[in-house]
Length: 119
Image (cartoon, rainbow, N blue to C red):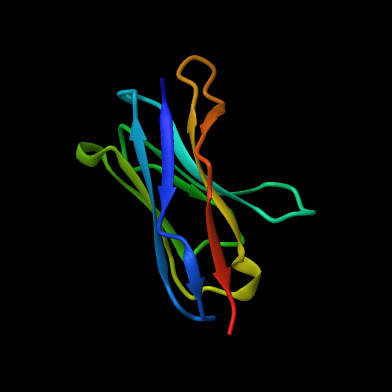
């Protein structure tokens, strides 16, 4: 059973940085992708970034390009999201997700971690 668990969220001021972590268990990835989304009540879930498990290919949403960086540590079964120059509009619940092996679609989700950016 694939399990994802986010951590690292919290309350920060505008301009601060945070690094979110996503611990993966119950599965050994090969060619799958992992990613990060965020959600605010009343808005659609927003894609942020994705990374391949077997290479260094990454893709970012335009809204976070240059500020957020997705990375991984395969030995630790962990995916990270480094967030710099945080803005109040970055406030959301951040979710880690992984693709299903046969379809390639994001299928597995963590419970989320809250990020609040406020002065």
